[in-house]
Image 1 (cartoon, rainbow, N blue to C red):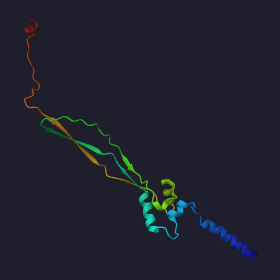
Image 2: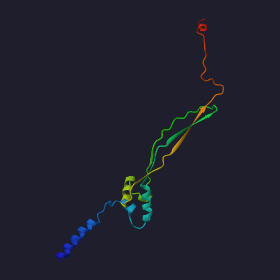
Image 3: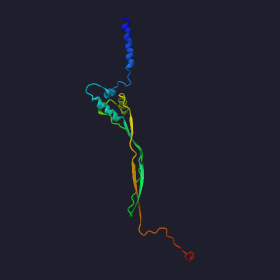
Image 4: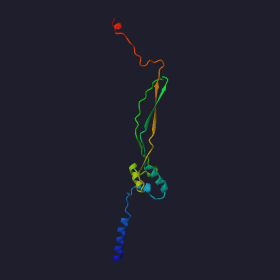
Length: 154
């Protein structure tokens, strides 16, 4: 009898070591990783988690300036736009995960499956700026006049 009790206690102790849970048993985790009837298929929920855990970084663009000479035109000035790097982070939590209060909770539930965040860097875009240089017919360039100082005092 003593052996049976000792064996039961040892098996309970070993079972708790083997089944150590890293994820809390909250409703958010149950909705995302649960197996009860009525939930979306696990593969669909895992795909949602994988999509949610992806971030895309778009680097600021490289600017190339092209100069073109053309006939005079009306001058139009627009304010310059500063080029900045953009990071797109997913924020939409699926409707079935309504117990997840924010994106951090949903992300934590996804990580219970071992799905980790992935950052993708998009190719660096190139922006071409065309500068138009006007020319004027008959414009005098580098013309100098010789004037006698005596005739000006006169």
